[in-house]
Structure formats: C-alpha cells, structure tokens
Length: 497
Image (cartoon, rainbow, N blue to C red; front, side, top):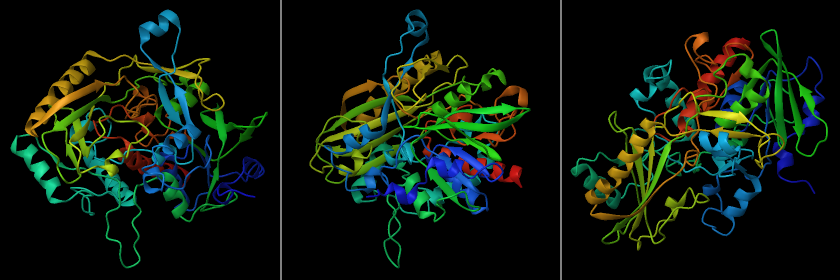
C-alpha cells in the first residue's frame, strides 16, 4: 500500500532520469520556508523547480494545526522521528580537548522547523538593518508580501489579533501604564473569519503552503515543483565561476548521483547551508565562508500572579534601540515550565492557572570568530549532515545584553503585580534562530553573497535563508526569512530571464 508521501513527492531516480539538458531550471536544497517560498515564486513565473529534502514527509501541516496539538504523549514522538542531535561549543574547550558534546537539535523533514515553530512573527526594526546593505524601507515590500502569504495576524496586520478579549487588553494596559510598552503579539495564525468559503489556515507551515500551491508535479515540468524526500546533498561542484553540478544521495542508497540545473539554491537553514558550502570547498573562494555565525540570546522566565487572569493572554513587549531585546508573555498555566516539544503551549492556557511564561530574546553579536567547523563529528543527522560543530563564544556585548535581560524580567513582573519565581539563561544555539556563515555585502570584497543572496564568485548559486544575514534583530527570524526568500527569488528570476 502506498503512503501519503507518494502523492506529494517524487523519487530521486525520476529527477536523475530527466537526463542531460532536460534537468530543472532550479535545484533547491531544503523544504522549510526559505526553500518553499522561493520554489513557489520561481514556479509561478514558469521555471521548473526541484526541491531536495534530507528528511521524510511526515505531516502536511504545523503540529499546532493538527490533532497532535495538545498530545504531550505523541508530539515528542513526532519530533523524534525527524530530530537529530548537533553540537554548539565554546572555543577554548573545543580547541583544548577536541570534544564536541551533542547538546543541540536540528530537524530534517519536509517543511523543516515550520512544522513545529512557535508562531510569533514580528518584523525587524529600522535599526536592526544598520549592518545590512539594505534598509528597512527597501525591505518593507517583502515584509508586506510575506505577512500576506503567511496570513499574519496582529497589531499592524490586516487580520485581527489572535487574543483580543477584555483580559488581554487589561493586561496590556497594566504594562503600558507602568511605562513598559506592550502590544498584541504578531502571530502567523489566520484569524480571518470563517465564512463565505474561507476556512482558517491556522498556523503557517511551508509544507501546507507547498501543497496548497497546486504546483507540485511528479516530474521536471516548467511551472512546476518536484519534491524529493529522503535525499542528502553532499556537495556542489564548481569550475570557471559557475556551479557545474550537485552531488546527492538517497538516505538508503549506496551510491551518490549527480544532478545539474541552470541555478542552485541553498535553503536548508543557516547552519546546514553554511556546512554545505564548506563541504563544497567554497571557503577557498572567500575567507568569510563559515564565519560570523550568531544566535539569539535567550532567557526564559516564570511569573506567578497573585490571582488568575480568567482569560488567556499573549503579550509582546517590543525592543527599542536602547533595549535590543523583546519579551513574549503567554498564559496563564498551571504548569511551571516550558518544554521545547511544545512551542505552541500558549494554545493550551488554563484560566485557573496563575503562572505566565516569559521568553526574552536578545540580539546576539555575529562575531567573526563564531564559525561552523567541518568535523568527523558525532551529529546524528542523515549522511554527512551531522559532520560539523558550531564553535561560538558570547562577546562582551552579549553578556551585557544578557545582564540587562535578566534585570528587566523582575521589572516586568512588578508591573504586572506578579513575582519572578524562576529564570534560566540558555546556551548559545538554544534559541534555534541561527544566522550567518554566508554573509551578504554590497561589495564583492566584503562578503560572500550579494544583496539577493547570490554568491559573488559563483553566479548560478545563491542562498535563500538566514545564512546570508550579517546580523539580526531580536525578532523570531521566520517572517524575515520568508521575506528574504521572496527577494532572493526575485534575484534568481532576474538572472535566469
């Protein structure tokens, strides 16, 4: 009996069998929001696209939109089907002992982390673009398009906030009265009224968007997208300033295959895209390949109220130029801590509870010394995908921001008439909002990629994810990755035209 995946995916042999001269216009590595957003834009403009995904097809939607949403017994098992252990280490211990403990996670699955993410979608601020060769004004049209295709709801979106009861407004008023600016959270959750043929699309998810697009095909077809699961890309080959082919292997195959296209795109997340560039020998083209990696500073807090709120809330305290971090406050709950398996815990509030969860994310410095290293490493991802270690240290700037974040949480608790009963500073990499490794620049000498993600030294290779970013704001990176991939696709279309 065939599985659901047989309907939405094609096999690697079919793509290889397309033969020389009849391969796709674009090969994309990765099926998260970067890969899928790019693929849809390119296919809608008549190009033939193949997406290569290392993981299997497991779910057609975000877990929070499925019956598994509140199943603490089943959701962790779904994670474990596609979750792999990885390593982030500090430089001195790593260079002293060579040890790289498995202390972090990655996921290989059709849809990538968009199957499990938390849903918060604020934009970067104007000053967050200070290190970019782009301004917010130039980037804003891509934000507008991304929010529309993701059905974002919130204070500045066309759709009303997800939480909008009296209790939510009273909660925001408490914070604003205390001088702590707060607003409804921007969420990639469709709140458009269900009527006249419109059904809510719930959480945004790359797998859902790809299926709904109507562009999936079983073969290499102009204006279509062929999705190949369980296929690990090992490297790209290049000569004469062009990528000449891509080497991939099915997870159960003994021999690799070579694929060709007019254009190639890395869209497998900042760390994996960077690892793939390193595995392809691209550091020989520019010394910055693999460097300037960063992740958010991440502090969790638990607030205890004097009495229940009697209504669920989700508040967002935005960053300021002087305070480069934000806080997401969710609740109430009777439980007292957060599990990474349950990023949508805020959908399961308990109005009898008196606990609020606070997640504080701050800007992390993308230091040149923070890098991805190819190793024989113990990572558990398929094929060679686990053969790396992220070597990264917190800078003096990072420690200052962390101290400010820790000091700010009690102020927020006091404004709410609550008590901060627990807090935790998470290690680098734990936020899972990685950037850098293939940073963009306005001039060829200053970076790896241009302002559309195209490699300066390889005209038919580009990066659609946050590996190209020179820095990031405190905001969850999902919305900005989606917007960036729209811009990236624009660059690919211009080149292939």
